[in-house]
Length: 190
Image 1 (cartoon, rainbow, N blue to C red):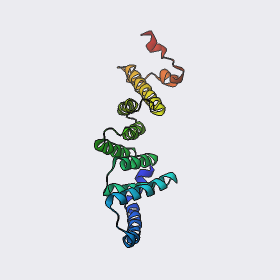
Image 2: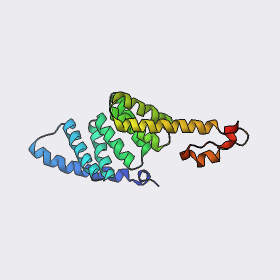
Image 3: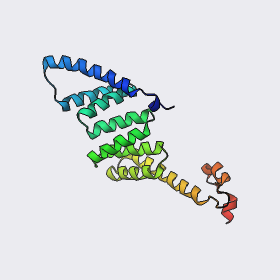
């Protein structure tokens, strides 16, 4: 099981709620915060937990912040925390929602592409990495990820092309020697 399936989201929500209630009581005494300010504070708390690699707590704080003010940056932060807990599907949803709110937010495309890679959806990842490299042409990491993803898309297309119709088997020799770039002799002759 992945961490995502074992996570007790309800319990985390209750834990965050209690912390929020305590902080609100303290804040009411001094001054009232707007929902946007409270969301920012919750995001900052989530960031602290993320830096400490306490991803479940970070996700809980980001979730509460999103309830108050669904900003693309907060959705993207939660997507990153979800990726760290192997919850790729949920991360893709958050990244997509972030993109819907701000189609120019390159980091959201990057997070979604990472989720697609985790799920083996190389073509979808390739599209998003390409978009990131277009939006941020100087981003060396994005260019590297795009090149790696593009290579995998081509590799998968090649493997599909060498599939035999009679037996439906992949060329095992090619698969074993793919790092060396050797082709299966049986198919190289054809």
